Image (cartoon, rainbow, N blue to C red):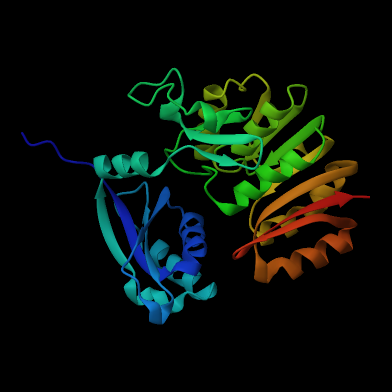
Length: 308
């Protein structure tokens, strides 16, 4: 009997190099498990292009999902690239091998190193315990299990939040809204061992992956992990909120954020497309927040809001 090889659905699209990050974000928002980027031969007339490949944890994309993806590319100004959009099948072994080849440890800010799980001292394989000593010198190491990549630290928005965490004094009560892989909650736990941290996500699959990452980083006993959104902690008070979500989601949650924040508390917001920043600025001002820090990275903006 011939064993059937498991494969995943994938999409490939060619975009201008400057739009690489935005294209990856659109695909990840559509449910992709992860994205890879490959350079194409230089094309000066269009400023250079790259090929973005997104892999999904289903064998076949539904027509409804495919339609939503094409609509999203149009909404974010990438309609011209749709003529290069192709459907693919990726064998599971190929996908995992490429993930491992493409995800190397890297520094973020001045305090963190993000490394894939196979560099953990107790992992199996050749990389176990072989994280470069100079790379991790005087830094907290965050180990992430790539699997379903709900936040590996590679995206500019996650990196903004990690850098912003460094710039604020340790807070006693911290809530990570939409925790994904749990990377921000882990960072907060590593920075301050006295903080009480809660992490929430509406996606049970993300919650399950975050639980694995908390255990991998030995912070599972210090982070409360819940399935849901702000509704599951609405009666609590926090000093810092971590909110790496879309602009629309953040705006919708601002009333809850204001109620649950202590006076002087802060919200670290990322995942905001630069063109949508005015929407958030207006909503935050009306709710009583002030912007105390901001950073623009390509298509993205990260801001810190403070109550009072």
